[in-house]
Image (cartoon, rainbow, N blue to C red; front, side, top):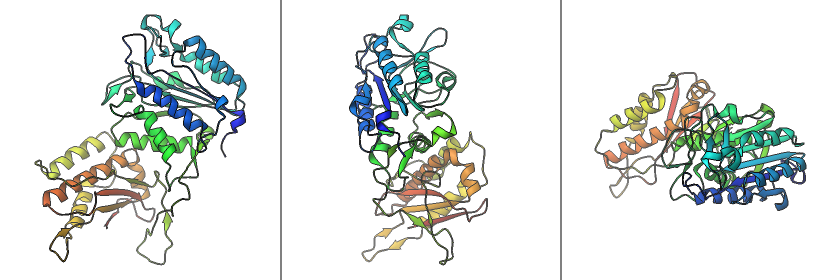
Length: 399
């Protein structure tokens, strides 16, 4: 059940251009605000009346933003949404400020939006549920162009009692604007998920499901990991419809060798992760050297499970080596591979399972490319949870 549009309000804040030379201008910020407004007022979002979704002027100062927050917080009785995209800044005393068009580093308390004020509006509102989305950076540098600032302990600063808070990056990473993309990296992927839908997803997107999907998507692209805080109850709040729900027959798979067993429905992302398709190519560096390097980078910092992924890679290569020779003499190999893990092993690797799927797919593509074999399509590897397998046991299939 979605929140009542008549009793809900949203305030969207962000500017793509800044007066201060110390703050970079990004048109993607303004586009991200507009994209969020379209989502929240759309039929597959919250269906808010346009009068209930306030897009603060890009040139608004802190006082104007405060007025918009005050009006919305007093009017909302069901859900209050506050979205901000831009530069996150930290004062000398460690306070978090959200940059506005006329923000001056020297006068943050007068020219930027103090996040403590945002917290106060969310605390004092009559709304039963509150959602705060911050698409701004905190610290560190990564690929793409950062949205600036240095800050530690960000979740402590942005956590609001009784509110679900979703942030674009952890304390040691920066939110990004990637050259050539219309939206910021975080908001772009959020909009893509909610606007495009998933035929195998739930009928309604809950905050918990959205976070898990975003985390998987962003980590698979080596982008900053989003963060969340909030009670378990509000985690289950639905804020959008899945536009593809029921449009396509849901995927099923027989998880046993016994034909008499009934198939079980797959649940993405909690029970399977599929790699981004990879085109086979010839490489100069040995396939195993590249695989070893990638695997160490992914699994190294994490607690080891019981599965040896070197053995998994061997099995994948043996599947590819089962060459089918066509009538005209061309040699073809499978392009879709599935690796089934036990529930315990899948859980052990859950935080990196998407990266493992991509690592296996890229290595398999390199292996196929080094053999000079033909393939009908790009290679994908799916890592799937099979509750009928015992810990330490896995299964590899191909088609």
